[in-house]
Image 1 (cartoon, chains in turn brown, orange):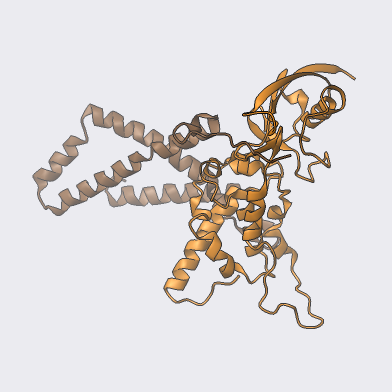
Image 2 (cartoon, chains in turn red, brown):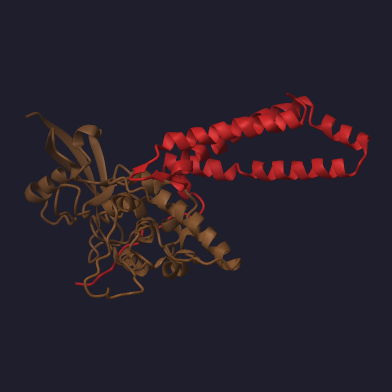
Length: 132
Length: 248
């Protein structure tokens, strides 16, 4: 009697097609290039501001106001909400559980705390930007 | 009691005869309260005595009967026939080598469980005469959920990271390490950190979260690993900035 364990091959390139759970994960990870894009956009915006040229700034703003860009930003916003903000807020109680005495604070409190902080910080930013 | 016929499609592999695994069909008359494990036992008792699989308690305690049921890592003793379609495919746990039929080789995870030093480490070991390491109920509550693991290894089977690179310590062993790190009686956190924060430790986890979804005992290893990432990062900066600490 000899041992000859059989190792099932796993494709390095298509492993995530095996089930829906992996597909959603890959969608979250592969579309994270948008995070890079927005980081890049922020750097461009800041450097345009730093150039101290109202014309350059106006050019930058107009470049973002074309119908194509507006649709892109709208889709990106939806993506950030559904693939980043909502999932990560939902997972927050897992990474940062709070225990008071013998009881764990219900996860929903931590999630709600995140949404409240989000609304508050957004309001402050809008207020600073003069939109409120 | 109502009898329902199911087609059980079972992966077979005999290391002495087969080059690779293949599927064998069995028609099993199931009673309505049967789990997949009962159906397998029916096959073994009545249809085919050569079928090899592991089981022991039939009550979600021993952790032996983990298998893929219709592609999902499951404890076959708690996966009921009534919840499944008429055709059920049973395979050995994915991400592990197949020893024979539904039996997988678990040597690798056994070593990993050992590697994370899953025991209480004390500086004053053995304790002074007459001293007990007491623990409040609140301190126990911090890690109690993590003690529920029965080593069924469904989490390893669900983890694509472990499937692609089995150097990764993996969900159950990391959750076990976290269980001891959170234990108020333990002083071995910094000792374990060398293993956990290393290459194949917590940072190899990309938070797919599948381990927690399939865990039959709701241990939530994914949560434990994320908490350890935060712990590890804090510990790193504490040491860099020269703060005292390192032990729980």
